[in-house]
Length: 308
Image (cartoon, rainbow, N blue to C red; front, side):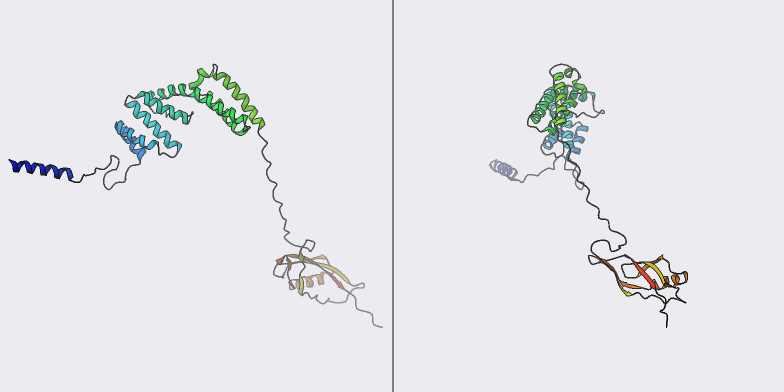
């Protein structure tokens, strides 16, 4: 009997000192599958009528959500869970917090009439005090001459007062007076705003001529390397032959085009155009960069001197 008692005591000690086995958390998922996103897991728990589990998960999410949309989704599902659990007062507080963050927030139409009615009731409770606080903030901005902030604040006051859930209280004092004041101060704020700064003048456009003529600043004219005039065919008429040829010299110093501005005689003009196409120059430059240049060359062929 004594030995049996000693054996039982040893067994109790072994069980008390054995290592504990840790179970996986509820949303950890099956081994080999990725864990669920917390908000999606909470939605699934709510859909499965596991309201207490969903609420515990949502309470943990409420403090760590980043975006406004995520916070709204968390508070909405908290309200749904609380309503499903019969905790109407807690649900009302969650809805009121949602409306305080965004007075224009409304639940989707496909949600239960019970939830939409709870939202409507909460808006009637929350919005009157909220809109008065918004008016006070806008008036404070107006008094410190922050007319931009005041104008947007008074506009928001008028938008909240136009909410259908405030139709009855907004038609009576003090909210009806608040609407009149907000409209007046909004107009004053807009008029007090400084005019918008004129746009900066456009930067002057530097017109770069396609072909330079030497009249522009900083232009170095081309220098002839080969510019030989062909021999005049036949006898030179009395008084000589006069003409002007215009050429365009490209960036490489070659003649791009040639034109007789003042013709000489047709036969010589043709010879002169052929010769001009072979002329070569050091190209014109602007600030060291080669450019196209239009050049005119005077043609003077005198008659031979009369021998005595």
